[in-house]
Image 1 (cartoon, rainbow, N blue to C red):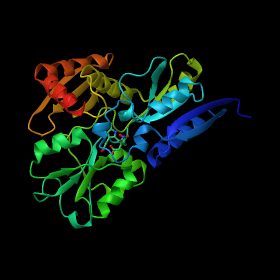
Image 2 (cartoon, helix red, strand yellow):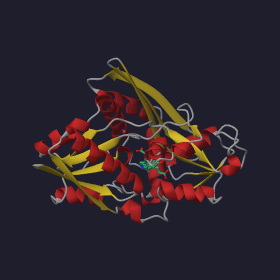
Image 3 (cartoon, rainbow, N blue to C red):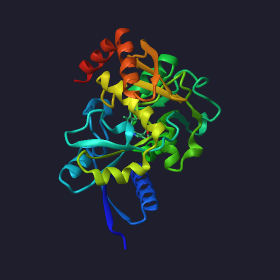
Length: 314
Ligand code: DPM
């Protein structure tokens, strides 16, 4: 007889469901007397599909409705792609657990006609689909001769748009493609020298109420120590830059022994200015490393770039 229950709130996209069912299965395997239920719903980000993400702009686009369920006591946890979870959470909620990271890189996906190319060899004028300002800015910086077009919709819709000929290639997170079983569509993993990934990319974040120790104890069995440290450093970097989820801010983190190394960048949307730096420190205070890196970038002009972008999207 199962004598413990846990209710998960999730988005209902295919990727969100795959991730949530993974969490359910892992928890039920590790805690045999636990029964996990799932309630799937649409968030604002799932409903508004025809407007560029950056223009909607609101932080918490993919998370607010799920958070409301927890605050109303209708759900115990919410499973998110960590990169969609704002760095500041509503009062009463916390990031209770960060799961082991999938490959955090971005991937190039091409259609049939472009299989002979890589990012470096795509002919001038090739059309790249992305609605991530981060990908846009870094790729423009490196490949100014390419053309960039906004693409919205979930991963599967995007692949369909690519295959129907609307784009020569698109950029997606490798993690999402792998989880959905589209690993074979990864044509090239984009090297970090060209494009740094988003904060938290490839990891799942489990959000819960701050005052429920029982729930915290349950989800703690899925926490991955190294991923957690890396993502806390990355999130503190983003928080210190006051960036929402839709900003041209990229990051890379590595752990070696008891040290953590962080690389970060802020770029202008025209791809003309790109500021990059590094920071490192001990694993006992990853947030300090993130903060320090943000301060270094600010001193080099990142502040000015970001405030210009906020003006533009206001
Ligand atoms: C955020 C961004 C995107 C998602 C912005 C960014 C991509 C948007 C786009 C914050 N959330 O990355 O610079 O391309 O229009 C999202 C995806 C995943 C989580 C899909 C993807 C799956 C991978 C993961 C959408 N959120 O990026 O291809 O777990 O990191």
